[in-house]
Length: 241
Image 1 (cartoon, rainbow, N blue to C red):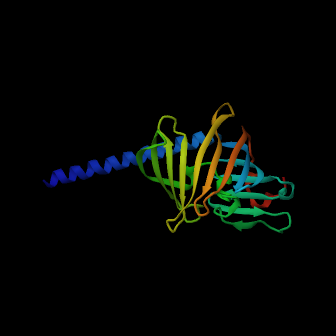
Image 2 (cartoon, rainbow, N blue to C red):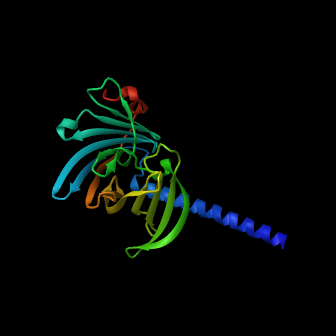
């Protein structure tokens, strides 16, 4: 009896390990569908919608090695000259009027429902570890549901629940939770198009679950490979290139 119990425990542990490996593989494929390039440039447009009001800002994001990002503010005119630098879970903003970059939180709002981290980071695997995976049908589409846990307390969201199309490994929806356990917003991955020679995510709709009716559209365009030098991703270089 004892031998059978030990064997059952070993099989259960092995199954959980394999399931965790499967979840990690799914998450890697999701990141490939969001951005397959190791060093890149991509344009991001944010449109904040609140009732009849709308506001649009544009940014150029330079990335390297999944955990280095530099965000240049390109529009409106009054925002030009500002930069965001993200290294792992550390983030700084450079303002032309300031003498040095200022440390800020990735969770801080950049515009509308989009946080600094939403724009600067294009890979889930850098910040999160998948802790479970289940199956569900979302709007008629068979999906994996990954429960992701932040790797450190400095990450923008403590937990993410991610729905992934089982056939294509494309993200369908993500629910974002803060450390208190509160669900604060939802991202719906709405559109895909051709960029850099392959099918890529081009539109995300972010819904504010604290203030219902407010949402932000995040559009990606002009993704291209670019050899970004390491020196770009330093605080000393902000505003000097």
